[in-house]
Image (cartoon, helix red, strand yellow):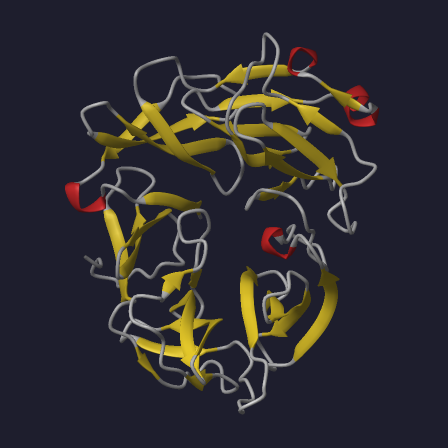
Length: 350
C-alpha cells in the first residue's frame, strides 16, 4: 500500500527487506506507529533481459532460472533508491560454461547486466564476475574478476556514471572474503565477515568475526590490511561474555553487538593503543532486558540516538521496537509486525 501522497522508499522511516524465493519486497514503515508508507516488489524469478535508461552501458542477458538474487539482501539495503532498481547477482551460460555476473532489475522485471560483457570463442577462458559490492559513496560497484578454477583474481571498480571499469587491486587466496570498508578506496581480503562499520569520530573501522569466541579488528579503513591494528576479543571472559556480530559502530568508539540483549561494548583511549584486550577488560552494557524473545536487525536512527530492532516471541509473534542508544529507558514497542511482513529484516532507519 502507498499513501495518498505517493511516498517513495527514500522518505524518512524504517526500510525493511523480505528476501524470499523468487522475489524481493522492500517496505517503508513509519517509525512512529509502524504504518506501511510504501512498498516495492521485485520478481526475480520471471525477469527478462533488457536495457536500462539509467545505465546506457548495460546490456541484456538471459540468466539461468532461479539464479537472480538481491545482493546481500538480508544484511544491507540492495535498493538503488534514486533509480528505483534492485541490485542483483545472476548466473548465465555462455559457450556451455556457467558464469557469474551482476546487474539491476526494475519493478517491471527487466534485468540489465552491469558486469562487463565477455568475449566468447572456442578457446576463450571466460571470466567470472563475483563478490559485487555496491559503494554508494563513490557511485561504483567493486567486484572480483576471476578466470578458470584458480583462486586469484583482479579487483575492479565499475563507475556507475560512465560505465568505465578500472582495476584497483589483486587478490590471491582470499578472493572469496573481499570486504569494502565504508569510505575506503580499496577492499580488504581475508576477513570472514560481510559487515564492516566505521566510527565517524575516530575514523577507525571495525570488523567482527568468529562465532564462538568473537573478536573485532579496529583499523584504518584506508589501509590495505588489518595487520598492525589491535584485535579485541569481546566474546570471552566476564563481565562482557558477549556473543554476536558487530552490527554498528558509534563515536567513542562503541560497538553495538547483534544479540538478544543488544550489547554495547565500549572502548577507551588506552584500549585503542593496546596490543589487544580480552572481554573482561572492556566495558559493556545492554539495551534490552533478558527474556525469551529473539531480537535481531538492529539499525540506528539517522541521528544515532536510538536503535530500532525486530523482536520475536517463541510462538512466532513479532513486533518492531525502538530503544535509546544510551540505555536511559527500556525498549518501546512501535507496532506488531503484520503477517505479510514476517520474515522481513530491517535494512535501514532513514
